[in-house]
Length: 205
Length: 429
Image (cartoon, rainbow over all chains, first blue to last red; front, top):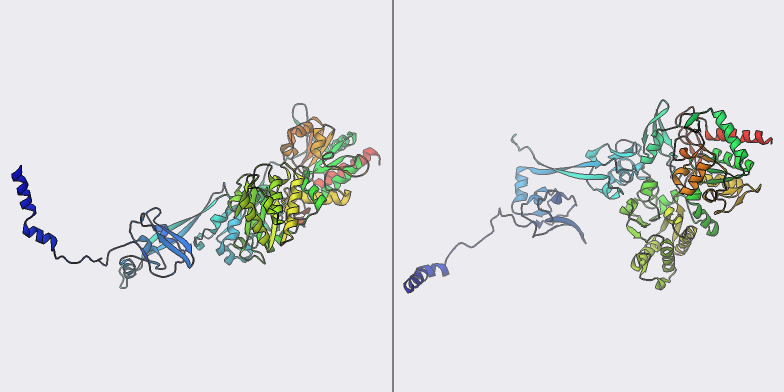
């Protein structure tokens, strides 16, 4: 027993080993440029496009809040998995992390978003609140804001046959004013996010 | 064929911006109208011809026979009741009053189970109201008290209040504050900025507390008033006082709950108090398309808006005594003519049961819940669809109904004129 303790002490307190352990000369630790840390603000103003929230795969990791100087994305570190998708999706370059922005520029990748408007005809009362309050509708047809009567078919939606009908889904900007104006929750806006890549110069994809 | 700027005859909003597509004698599409308008214009189930009850079922009868029999029933009655009138136009309503005068009957309209208490309150303290155009262009605070416009007047918010762009409220809902007061969280409450949930029957107390706060006597208000916290009452009173122009709309939650016309009186007096600080108006949300018109027509002919009794040879008005439900409930009515309304669906059971006991004649385009109670039903045109005429919007603005299709049915005013003439023949006058 005693022999074995001595053997261990000799083994672990060898001068050479102790010297290496205490006076090791290794290269200092540096963060490599490709390291993706938690997203940080770049200083560019947030336009409240909410692409970050749409693309984020981690529940509760990011939200966009109104602060004194405007909208601002807020990262919740306990939830964020540092995937960097929010950085890549933001059309206004509000966030940065690692080399994501540079890579995105070099490779010409982007996320595009479209909006799908779904209406539940069983819940819709045809009140026209959504069509009247929609800011895009108001631009396309000044009459619709003044009482829900649309004079043209260029608007995103209008009331036909007692229910609201979508005519031009592609014009929707996803502001969701219609959703909050609907008393019966009959209208819902779904955001559809799609990754794209611009053709490279020289014909390559 | 598309007919533009058609007036919807369903509710008191009388939206006059519908585009109706007609094919032959049928409405096939309704644009800009709500679900209620669409159902009104494209609905089916019209009675094809007059019917008379037999011991085992119904027989078809001719219009002439039905009219003759109706006149005989009315002439033979000691205490006839002429009820309804709110879904037809002014000409038919006017003819109804003349028949009532001729037979010494009681004529009442649907206000009696609706905004009758509002009229009593207005007769006591006046009506600080305005047109819906003023509300749309000026109001930055909208209060819906005891009403649910989402279900009963679906386009009220998009045409006249919350979501409509007004001259002085260009940003519509962003410039307006919407307050909903109700005993339950209705759909309208979902889009309100402030929802006040009160206990059932607590309207009078809450209105009194708000009056006290607006008057500067808020120290007398207890911590809770009919389920509403003192803090919320102060907050709401402040919103109202700071408004540039406020508009209160109220419904049957106020007129038909405990307190009835006293609730409405209190609400009008709250409006009065608020006018010491800013501009505030109050208006009832009227239900039937032309219920306001029936009040107007009755008033300009008899001097009274509803519940008019001609049994003394002169117009006599005493709601509670000469109102349709009370006459039926007491069992004193011995014949009834129902026009353009559905008491079978709306009256208390005792009143509806009495209608089934006495000879009741119904003039209505559709088979309704009143059909099983009546002895004769005479189908007619629908005012605003296959008949034109004048109606009054909920704010008292007269609007001309348009005729969008031609049908083989006679106008109810013509049927009533024939009944009137036949009564005169029978009476020998």
